[in-house]
Image 1 (cartoon, rainbow, N blue to C red):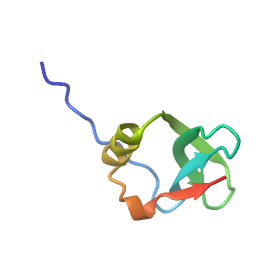
Image 2 (image 1 turned 30 degrees about the vertical axis):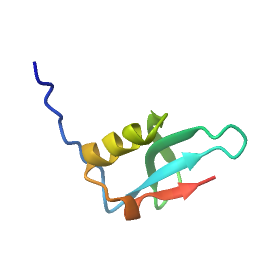
Image 3 (image 1 turned 120 degrees about the vertical axis):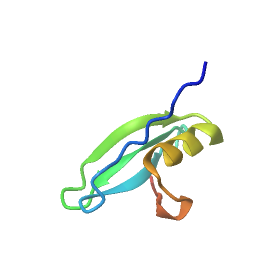
Image 4 (image 1 turned 90 degrees about the vertical axis):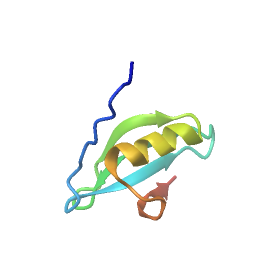
Length: 70
């Protein structure tokens, strides 16, 4: 059986994709940051490169669009 991947969207005018990284533990969380308030909405834990690729594919994000914050 095939699992159909559903593309999701985000508010491109008010949010930007962010990869929040911990300096101490190396943990990474992908999500979106509101450009007006700075509030971060976490979407998924990134455990490996495949998780990051899945996140980018699901939301139609290019590698150059994701900002890393520490």
